[in-house]
Amino acid sequence: MLNTWTFMKRFARSPAAIGSIVPSSRFLVTKMLESVDWYQTNSIIELGAGTGVITEAIDAQRTVGSTFISFERDDDMRHALNARFPDIHTHHDAFLLHEVLAKQGLSSVDCIISGLPFANFDNSQRRTLFSDIHAALRPGGVFIAFQYTRLLQPYFLSVYGRYECKRVLINIPPALVYFCTKQ
Ligand SMILES: C[S@@+](CC[C@H](N)C(=O)[O-])C[C@H]1O[C@@H](n2cnc3c(N)ncnc32)[C@H](O)[C@@H]1O
Image 1 (tube, rainbow, N blue to C red):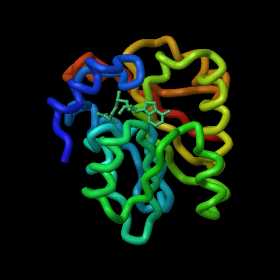
Image 2 (image 1 turned 30 degrees about the vertical axis):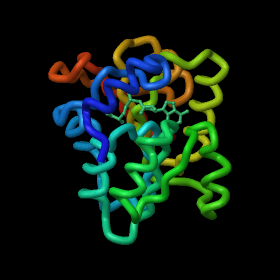
Image 3 (image 1 turned 30 degrees about the horizontal axis):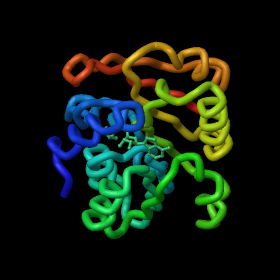
Image 4 (image 1 turned 90 degrees about the vertical axis):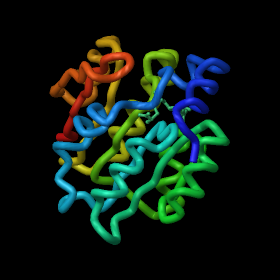
């Protein structure tokens, strides 16, 4: 299992790719997941799983028989996730979301949870991911993402029409959690 120290070393090596110096706090993890209706959620995607702090909470709360697919680009963190959560389908790159869902035979999913460092992607990458995420959700499906700045608000607004934003102060750094529902 990879720990906080390993995560910090990854951040020191590639700060933009990792996006935060330490894994999310339990307060942020709780805020991310507290509004999910697990009984209406049979398919869950996690983007940017890191050391698995949110993965673990999703896995503990999701219903038996639900499908859970997680993406993490760092090879060591992804291998550690594979070893720790053998029942979860784990993939390399969030930009392959569309292909992975097609291979799994999933036309849409109920819930997408993101820890991706969107602010460190370029505009074209952001547009691609926002469009892929929206396309992957079923109508009524939810997209929940944390960010450290308000930079992405125009994207949430233009793609989903509206969003809810909650602040989590006990996290390094303090975070904003965005909740969007596909109309
Ligand atoms: C801010 S960290 C969040 C980690 C974890 N979810 C948490 O809350 O502690 C962002 C994670 O996204 C991963 N990541 C960055 N770009 C990615 C991509 N294109 N596909 C999948 N994961 C990516 C990084 O390797 C890093 O582990």
